Length: 71
Image (cartoon, rainbow, N blue to C red; front, side, top):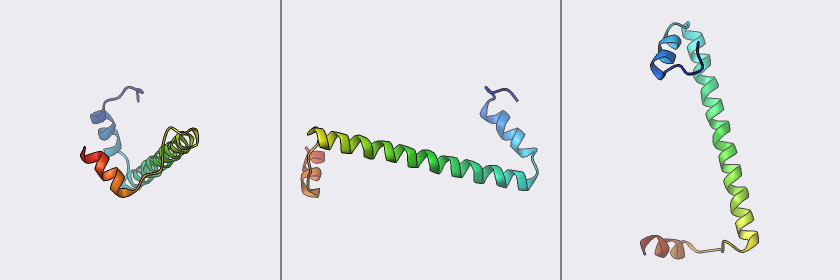
């Protein structure tokens, strides 16, 4: 199958798989999405720590954050 297949083409191809293979594919995609989410969070934490250490960010209370959001 071409790498530029449309969503509908991919969905149709998946429908031709046996049910067990479809379940395996769903599990694989879920694991990959979870790993992508973990990598994104790790990157955001690293960036936040870097900003905090460089003085670009400062600690704030919940009340400070709410006031900033509401203003």
